Length: 144
Ligand code: DQA
Image 1: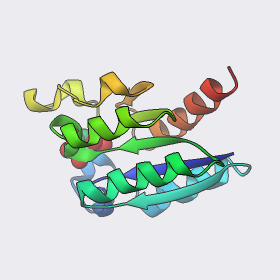
Image 2: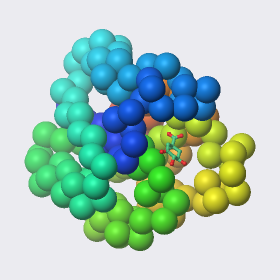
Image 3: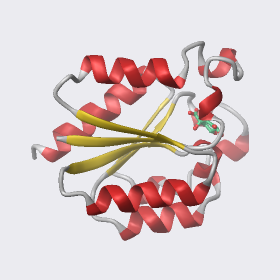
Image 4: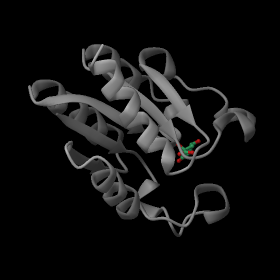
């Protein structure tokens, strides 16, 4: 089983970026801990600051038979990218939406996600562990 772990804009700065909100672990730390906790999964890790790159990564995953689904932290694109939403809707493999922070406990503009409706589900507010929960959720969905 292969899973795409897709991170959007500004998540490359984890560890340095607002550690009070996003924690002190880097994206590399988070990705290595996923690989350590789920040794049987073949992860593909992609991060981009660009909307179009995220969309391309979703389509590539869709076209690779061994790829079973995606864990997606779209960063701020979550709140306004109709293009990303349409891309998720255009594919058949499941996407789990993840946020390190609890987007419902912050600024008003973060309370709305335009992608939640087309995702399998949402995990928000559990920090790094949220990525682990998202992988569990994908695996449990796949085994159904
Ligand atoms: C985030 C929440 C978004 O509102 C924000 O723009 C991010 C990170 C999170 O992981 O908590 O970049 O997706």
